[in-house]
Image (cartoon, rainbow over all chains, first blue to last red; front, side, top):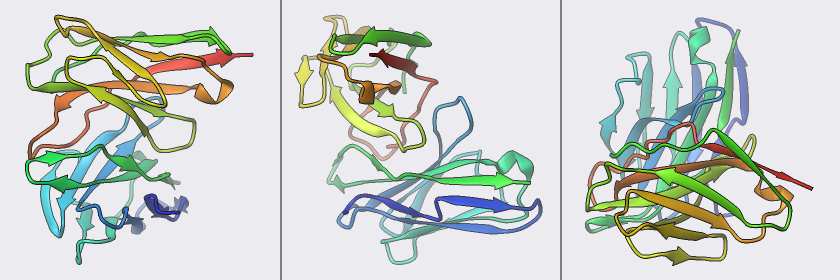
Length: 116
Length: 112
């Protein structure tokens, strides 16, 4: 399967713990996005990378959240000191940007986080 | 990105065409109309996009009005597997700001 993969698919943690999620994009895609989705809502943008560079961060991304894409391939999203309000589905997507145009985003299956 | 409005839900019978409307009255000349869908417990899936001409692919057809203020996604022969939330999004296709802004979408229920 050459689609976007995310690990783990489910994570249950206690309030105050740190969690880290991984996303592996489609191999030739240079853009990688993180979104968060709560129950009954559409996904909300968190941040995106072009290669290694983090080009935009949403105001939703508090200082407890950090994302990296060290080699321009996989990415990690870490949440420190988790709160119950962090419970959500965390979605990763990738796309190919060439020149001034870019193609549609392909999404992974998501990581469902439950903070107790 | 321009805001879109969609009905909350609709249903259709299996085998019939599903016509999903979307209003985007403030769309700009360089903004495209995109449709994604999200089947329960999965990530969103790209369906189709268009600028002003009608578009068709193996999944669906997209009909955009001449004034571009509204569009309709058509699933020609809906199946039970098409039950999902469908999101209509308008955005500039070429640019550094490439995030998708999702609304709540329309929930399509296909009944047997």
